[in-house]
Length: 153
Image (cartoon, rainbow, N blue to C red):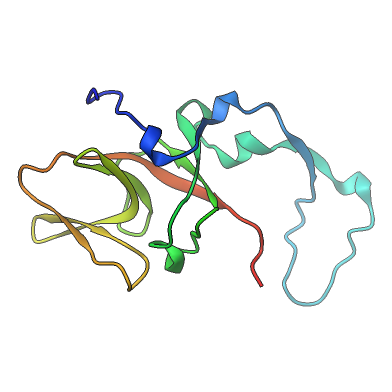
C-alpha cells in the first residue's frame, strides 16, 4: 500500500462519483414544510437537477461507499446506507464524520482532538473510542458530505 494512494478495497464497495452516469430528476425548490400541506400539483414548477452534481460538491474527488456495521447509528448512518465521501476535505470538524485509515484498516468515525491526543469517536455507545497512539499510521481519507438511505419505520 502506498501512502498517496492507499488500498481502499477494504472499505467495501467504493464508487468514484465521476463513474456514475448523469442522473436528472425533477426537483421542486419550494421549501416544503413538515406541517400543513401545500399543493405539488403543477409539474411546470419542477426543474431538472443533476443529482450527483448536487450531492457531490467536488465530483472529481467524491466517492460513494456502502456502509457495513452500526458504530455510527446515532449519526443516522446505518449498515447498508451509502455515504458520499469528499476526499478534498481531509480536515473535518469534530461534528463531521470521516473515513479514517488507522494502521491499514478503514473506519467511519468522528475525529476529535483532546489535550493533543487524536481520538476516533463512534456514534454508538456500544463501541469504544479509539486513541490514535504514537507510532500508529493514521490518515483521514475524506469527509462524509451526504448519507443516502431509505426512510426507516
